[in-house]
Length: 248
Image (tube, rainbow, N blue to C red):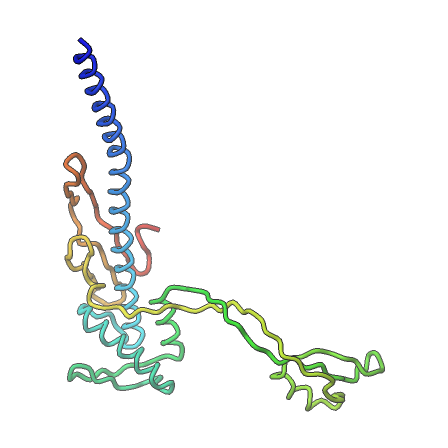
């Protein structure tokens, strides 16, 4: 009798453990699947935006969109490299790429706009060593000499002033400065393909060449099994039409 009761108790404990594990699966597996769906959606839209921006840059230097994304990307990347290598590489220039000549028109801020478009804004703290000067300047409003503090790099503008009467003290000052910068990346051929399906994005250019659209290649819901009881689902990741994004 005691053996039967102990057996029932063991089965009950096993059942409790099983239902606890099942509860954890029901709670956490869907969350993991949602995170996976969200990752592919964000990555796909990120690539679509970069693809669109490449075409916009191409039009800015060539005067038209290019249905061949890889050609457009290589030309835009090459133009950026040329500007970085030579700051005078602006206005009408010739780029030879893969044996083909391209007559481009590079505007002044091209490299800066490229780096900020294809980059992530970041911040860093730099330790700056400044030289501070205490100088004497005659203050006409007070009718007497006055002592002020300036940075050493600003000294020249004061020395040219007839009211400047000399330097009293020089001091080294260390300060922390928050610097904004961009971690730039170079778009590559993966930009052209959906990370989920590996299919190329759909590019549409209007007949007159003034309108450009990029859209997700997913036309029907994508379903993939996960952990027997669940499934991963993804619908179209949207479109970008002339700068307007469907997910905004």
